Image 1 (cartoon, helix red, strand yellow):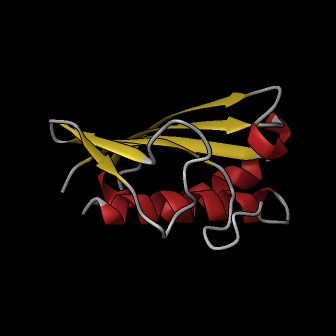
Image 2: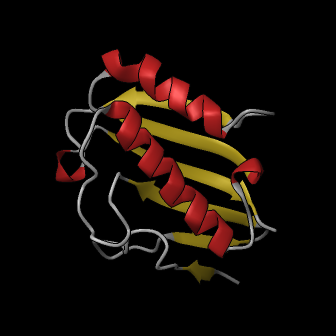
Length: 126
């Protein structure tokens, strides 16, 4: 059965979607953007600052589901500017040090709230 995952430790959904859905042993995480979970405001700073906030948000959702970043099997990274890939990748690598997940990275024309990065993920539950 489908289970909705929700936590106040990550930004609330800003539309008709869930932070994550657990189903059949997997957790499907909606894309996170660099919003501060307390203020709801976009984190100021460069791509490194924004990527770190995004990954902390994903981590919080996973932890609320009883999982962790180590259980992530696939991510999709959406970048406003592919020229920022090396910096984003450096931050990403600090969060996924051993057995990193499969990943796709794409440049997009625009992201919600004009942020620089959004990341979605699929993880193994528990």
